[in-house]
Length: 289
Image (cartoon, rainbow, N blue to C red):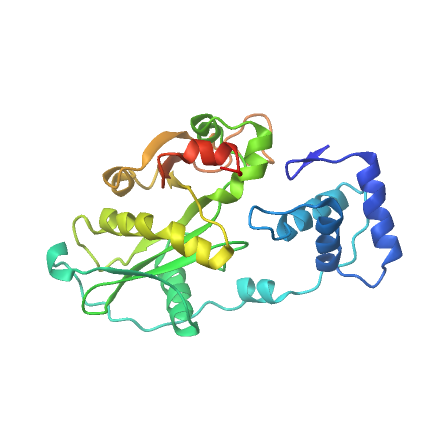
């Protein structure tokens, strides 16, 4: 079996069964962490790939190959399922030329007050809402020169498999599994509905592109070398990404990983990429470079 990009043999399954049987008081997190250590399953920054291991264990459990202990409510799950944050923000229309709002400030979310504002804005004004990210992520808030909030962005883990992206990079499955943490996905991009400023969106994307490698390395000990995003074709034209020099490489198929009979089950999305260095293909093919 290939699960989470790993070849899983009968010996691996038996090892996991023995690990569970020998440690009946261990919860799922402890099991996934110990499995990473036993297998030497590490990310590029040297940290164990705990989330990937936990997903692997859940999939084996769903197939009836192992019997995991029941899940418990983690702090992260509590965050993702708690009631949405309600915030109060001045909604006076902002229609000034970009030059009158500069310098635009794009800064990572760093404290609880900023995190509350970030969550509240996305929940109230983004069509996908927001319940909290999973895994490595960097959040940004956008302000004008008068400290008025203009919007926010969320970058998180890259999609596991995207045909057009993988072809553009020149990836095989082994390289994708090894180097995927070097890609960040622009999961949310919101400019508030009362902010109508020409060229602001592409300007913000440009600012993020100039700083996200450094921000990601500060947060997680490794940089990212490529950005990706998926633009829902029925809703958006992707104009701001095009203006910011993102590269349109293809479209998604409209099928989820659980789709059958080639049925379109989710909206088709345009796939845009933005290299953060001219050597991105080399870096994504060999972590030693």
